[in-house]
Image 1: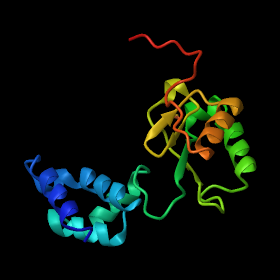
Image 2 (image 1 turned 120 degrees about the vertical axis):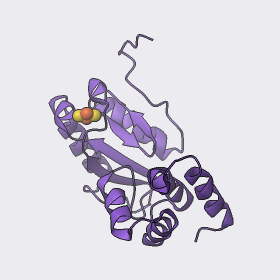
Image 3 (image 1 turned 180 degrees about the horizontal axis):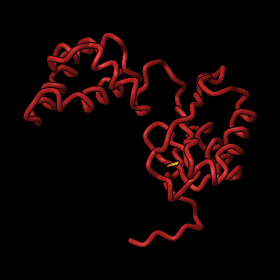
Image 4 (image 1 turned 90 degrees about the horizontal axis):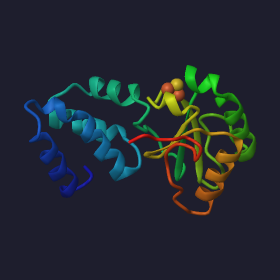
Length: 171
Ligand code: FES
């Protein structure tokens, strides 16, 4: 489907689990990394390879927001809008992003750089409000930090992910 290398890597993932179904989530990740999102063809192929029903695989793909089921911009902005982030001002951040980029939730900027979606809790409530950009978390967002992040991404830079500079992390 995505070539021999992809199929070989899926087989290597499957070999790590006592049951093939255990490989489902990493196989979906691999499909997403390979193609940019999980295509229906990938779901069908993985279902067949793991001996699962296609509807079950599709249910997993669509349940978790970390899986993309359609083409997105270069940067997928997933802003958390669950309680902790809401209490810490994610609504303002969301409105700011929408105005700045000129798009609504679920849309992609005309130049294909940013896609904006809102998601449920990403497990980083202690550093709310936060946003996942592709695979990285950017936390303690305010308007200033959000602008700096979007500026950097638009310039093709890879800003350091994590919490804001004022937060003390005890290791
Ligand atoms: S509520 Fe936003 S990360 Fe948990």
